[in-house]
Each structure stands twice: as structure tokens, then as C-alpha cells.
Length: 123
Image (cartoon, rainbow, N blue to C red):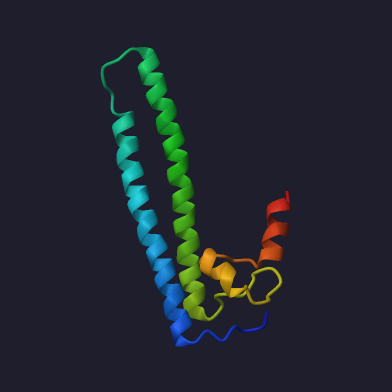
């Protein structure tokens, strides 16, 4: 499975490593804060059944957000692996290089813009 290689020089590699690590750090802070909030919402406390139902709904919503953040952390980890292996910046569908502006906007991107649009429409 060989495709075109993107010649990332040291400067570009470090730029994207920095972007990915910065995104990971921000998400880790968000996930930690969300987990603390969820624990606080799930703790039993005084109040009537309506108060507890509202708190449980908020906790469920916050838990879903935390799950999305954790999936994004997995995407970042995978992008760092690709960066180390030389596969970073190559579309996983068409094997063409992903445009640098797209990578700068979405450092963990796995697909070029065209293939991403196809991915989003696919069932």
C-alpha cells in the first residue's frame, strides 16, 4: 500500500507535533474538568425528585461531551503516530497529500477535504 509521500521537513514536523500536543493538552484539561463536574452532579444531595432528575440529565449530557473529547484524544494520538511513521498528511482514503491549510485547521485530519465530505455523507 504505497502512496505519495509528503516531504515534511523538520520545521513542518515540529509545527504539527506542537499543534497536536497543544490540542491534546487542551482536551486533557477539558476532560479532567468535565469528569470533575460529572462527579459533582452525580453525587447524591438534598432536593426533590425533580432536582435529581435535572441533575441526572445534565450529567448524562456532560458524559456524552466527555466521550467526544476522549475520541478526539484518540484521533490526536493516532495523528502523532502517523507523524512519527511518515504517514502524516496523507489521506487515508485516496492516498493523496492533505492540503497544508486543512492540516493547520484540523491537525488530526485523516482525510483530504474531498474524501472527508464523502465520509460524512456515507451511511
